[in-house]
Amino acid sequence: MSSDPALPPSPPRRIAHLDMDAFFASVELLEHPELRGLPVVIGGRRAAPGAEGHQRLKTYAGRGVVTTATYEARVFGVRSGMGLMKAAALAPEAILLPTHHEAYGRVSRAFKAAVAEIAPAIEDRGIDEIYIDLTDLPEASHDLGLRLKAAVKQATGLTCSIGITPNKLLSKMASELQKPDGLTILGLEDVPTRIWPLPCSAINGIGPKATVKLEALGIRRIGDLAKADPELLNAQFGPRYGAWLSEVAQGHDERPITIFREPKSISRETTFERDLHARQDREILSRILIDLCERLAQDLVRKGYLARSVGIKLRFEDFSTVTRDHALALPVADGAALLEAARSSLKRVTFDRKLRLLGIRAGSLIRADEYRAHAPDPAQVSEPGLFEGLEG
DNA sequence: TCTGGGGTCCTAGGACCC
DNA sequence: TCTGGGGTCCTAGGACCC
Image 1 (cartoon, rainbow, N blue to C red):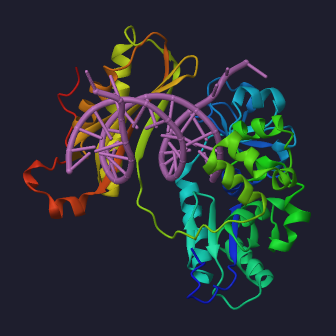
Image 2 (tube, protein in one colour):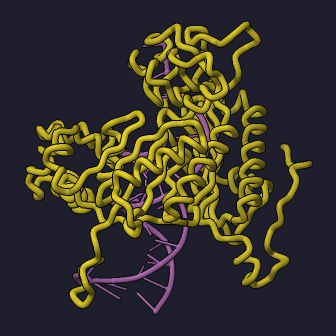
């Protein structure tokens, strides 16, 4: 990477991680200021049934999960990703609001634009967080951090938390250290005191499975990981992940800021309100599949991509998941072609349990404009079609 | 009181080609 | 009559992240 002896050493990088505080919930509170200070949970699929006032979490029945919760709701143990029924047991009186993705998208664009005015080298990490390369800016990190937070507040009315360190790994962890409304600046020299006491799961890339495995080896904190025998980690986790664990425990991370990436896949999936039987509920499943294909086709056309492979995803009542992929001779973006590919893949699945989820994915994407410019026979490039007459 | 929807990356075996 | 070795594509599953 930067170790070419012919080149002068690159100056130390300065990377910020900016994370909006309880983003979806905070956007909702802009709309519903009367709920400020109350435990509020965002999630579920439909708006509350016509009752007066706001819906209480305890009245919810269904399969939704918590998307975000205010800090007042987190006090009760409510966490993102938790089933709403479980959250209702923890905080029955919390207010439940449905999601409004258009609003979140609008506020997301606003905070990113405000940051870009100050520092344009931004890596998008989703709707509510970004990395920012501050290396080439003249100001001190603390001043920059305060300016970024003020700009975000001015543009959106919302607070964020920022970590500024020499790399993405440490900045991500630093932004978590003083949430909400935090600003944390760390150097590599701070790793033993500030990072090593944290649990291994604080590292972006160490999830539930790896955490359990590490704990079985007596490795609970990042400091334990830093002192662990690299050979042991390689033996337990494989050479690649093992070597990565050894590196990140030292706070090392050379990943660059990536300003733009082509998407690799686009997908649509849905969990049913009740589990469906492959034969008895065939009509319903067919309608759902057609609808998913139609929406995926619209996504492909809107974003300007063609799919060279189509995948289906099925989740059964026992939560086991199966995927089937199908490579195509010619790239497509129309619903009829997606549906045909999906149906051929479905024939390779054994249906011995009820289904809870159906999904479809467009993979091996190529840009439609580039393909059409070089297509051997333009007549063979499929055009977005209609679904009329496709049922059955 | 079970577990959304949208993604990325990695692994691993087999096919197929040179 | 006893066993190459790379490279790439396809497919399936799984861990992880927001």
